[in-house]
Image (cartoon, rainbow, N blue to C red; front, side, top):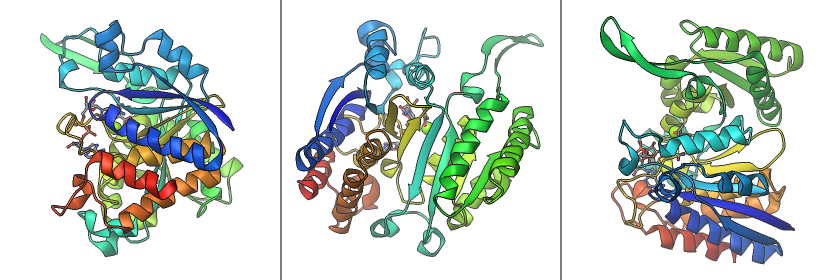
Length: 356
Ligand SMILES: NC(=O)C1=CN([C@@H]2O[C@H](COP(=O)(O)OP(=O)(O)OC[C@H]3O[C@@H](n4cnc5c(N)ncnc54)[C@H](O)[C@@H]3O)[C@@H](O)[C@H]2O)C=CC1
Ligand SMILES: CC(C)CC(=O)C(=O)O
Ligand SMILES: [Mg+2]
């Protein structure tokens, strides 16, 4: 098949890990007889430096015309000035919104080979296989914000808004995914405090009762969920939650397989191109050192093959190749736990070698 792919390397370790994932896609195309074309576009801090805008219009246009998008990460200390007109992260939020990518799928899958990379005991993490559905284009990250004065003191606010259709569509997707897995769905909210969470909870309950009575459904408050994830992660199947709760809980959940550098994600909407990225950020502390773990981005490219190009065999081949290099004992520093480690490039090449 022919596919037009947009690459958005971004900032920090973004270019290094996207380069590794691109090499993997190139080798997949060669082995399976596909023709992938790549267009690299600006997003984030580098886009601010070059155009003044973290999401230039050419980037949006190229993404809209593509079959799928692979993104590295955005942001870094260079653009952290609290008084700056715009930030790299604004570009990422906008591309998600512009493309209507309301569903962010974040699988938390264990690799047996990495059991010793997790800070948690093997008996606790054994059998963990969670699929998070994080709502991605609403909630507090998109709420009205501003600064002002309260009681004579400088103040700031950011509001959290969810509408019924926004909750319905993400819950439906998550419930359908549950039907294809272990048929269990957990909705996470903060309904004991937040009004949008109460709307979320009653909407989700109605959708589940009316449309998915066969799916085993429960609700958990987000603070308790933070604890359950560490205490009994293997008990969860599909989890659906709002934008900020999903952002935070999945970074926490990355410690189950052992590193942020292992977790991919897919952002999907109603048709149109999907956007694939690792869940981590631009890791400025290790950028340019050639030691970042490229596996999250490589696994994101596998999700791209599966969800946007319908290439299931190819996606599985990439996932197996990752498993094999881990079984061979290859570790980047983040999963080496003090043992021998390899560079980003060597890890990427090892995966492509398995696929060639
Ligand atoms: N999707 C995106 O583009 C995201 C961007 N960010 C941005 O990234 C910048 C840095 O944020 P942080 O809070 O430091 O989060 P981060 O996720 O970039 O890094 C947190 C820690 O994990 C490590 N890490 C992350 N990815 C790794 C990988 N592939 N291999 C090895 N180690 C890895 C980093 O070295 C760091 O110690 C900020 O500007 C933030 O806004 C943060 C999260 C997501
Ligand atoms: C700009 C942020 C919302 C990025 C982030 O932390 C994420 O999507 O995981
Ligand atoms: Mg995050």
